[in-house]
Amino acid sequence: MRSILTALLAVCFCLPLVGGQESDRELFKLTKARAEKGDAEAQFNLGDMYSKGDGVPEDDREAVKWLHKSAEQGYATAQNNLGNMYAEGEGVPKDDKEAVKWYRKAAEQGEVFAQYNLALSYDIEGVPLGQELLVDEKTFQKEMMKWYRKAAEQGHALAQYNLGVKYHNGEGVPKDLVITHAWWNIAGANGYRGKFPLRDPAIGRIERRMSNIEKLKAQALSREIIKKNPKVVNYNKVFELTKARAEKGDAEDQLNLGVMYRYGGSARRKEAAPIDWVASYAWFNIAAVNGNDTARRMKDEIPMPPEMVHKAQALSKEMVKKNPKLLK
Image (tube, rainbow, N blue to C red; front, side, top):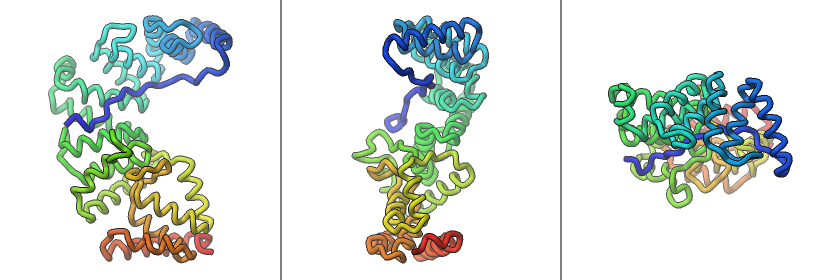
């Protein structure tokens, strides 16, 4: 089911240039001088300038030339972008096998964009690419999942979403809505909510087919993934500031934090956290003790069975015990 798969090549960029055309041309001259002396980073930046037309007329062939030089020295971002040039046929004939070769070199160095692009190449190109690489379908699927997972574990939201798609469709793995929800939940916290985020977030569509118990299991799995590897979520400044104020006893921010955990990336919010009803109830509970009537009402509206309510209440007590400043 390709309709909900996100296919977008990830590109690594050099630092943005500042100033007008004159400063762009001057920076181009300085970068070219360094590149001609064999500096791999300068070679990458020069290739990027030719690719985007910064300080020099756009020239994809020259871009490929300098990206090649940098990539051959092992510069991972150049290897990824060179892979993109081959994948798109820009400055060189389109060659999926060559694209995969460079993505893999960068991916094996831990370059997250290349890990995602490598997985996506296996995913989008499918069987023809597998035949070209002389890889059987089982190995092909295994490689695709391996690289989606590696990128997802580094916090790449599109990889997290596509990993969820695989579990949703049962491609290369057994179908599992709980695991799908867990990864889409994390992707939502990272800002990606599917193809129609405002009208119908992806996670909202599958929640309609899940029981509240299944939703709680999925939330617990998200929590476990994040606990084992905090890098999977890149909380934004609004969330971090809200959390910091909540931890100092501000009842309004405790309410807001509860709302973030209640709705997560399924809501039309930029400051999303992963959906976590237990954490949401805990923060509402603390805000209610601090006199916030809205929090008192909202905690009772969370559709949790009694045993999970007890767990959330226990979490509130534990949080206050660790940080007495939560209560005024």
